[in-house]
Image (cartoon, rainbow, N blue to C red; front, side, top):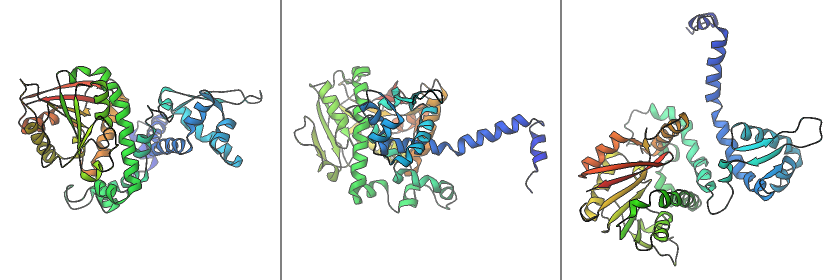
Length: 367
């Protein structure tokens, strides 16, 4: 029998405020998905671009006009913008009711990254909030109750009837969305990598970007360090869509079978897609492709290290949220001990973690 309201109140020391605070905590989590969908709506409507069009600050009327909203939905847009300003995506200068002025909405450091330009992360966020990625989590509880191991059927497979990689191959529109999202993320983070972590590439003369897709990361490295011969290894169907007239060479292949030789191997957000056994196999292939440590051989991994440089709740939450997210394809975000385990099992002698990329880190791995 469920406890009565009186019993619940007694468990909270008879304190009504404690009860209300507990309810608020649950409600805050319950409606958290609305924040994500509000952000998705802002991306769909290109609200950030509308505000940018007006010099970085715009009224509700100006935004509604620019995004070509039906006039009857302007009050609804006001409510959307209220959520997005309270949660810090946009800023607002409020005018008191009755003074005739309109609220003025502005760009924050976060929403400036949604403006479509060379540094925009909008394609990546759009990918993360796409129905293909969000719908599986409606069945997370049912997936946990399956009487089978995770590697038998991932949450993604349970929802879509195929793996993420097969879906990308079978649905060209999603493949485009995925590739654009990855290129967007590479363009953003690699600009910071070459500025803040340039020492990682010192002494490197050749580099293979394994599973590098359309080569966003490799192109950034090649541009910043012209002396490095950069190549991308990916599946034939990916390489077939690689850009022409690039300084980067594209090689069709499979990282589980073999990796072309180079001074350094680069793995950006690759290993988190796989379980430990697959990661060890990939890392062993990397080790076979590079020279000794004395000769400058190394593997450079760009990925999360859960718990590394987690100065605030937002960092810690993002680490564990992304770990649960990537679990939907049976992937994993690892802490240092978990990274150490697979690196050691692959036969490497040591590693160094450089936590300078926000929630992500650079991990140098030495043969």
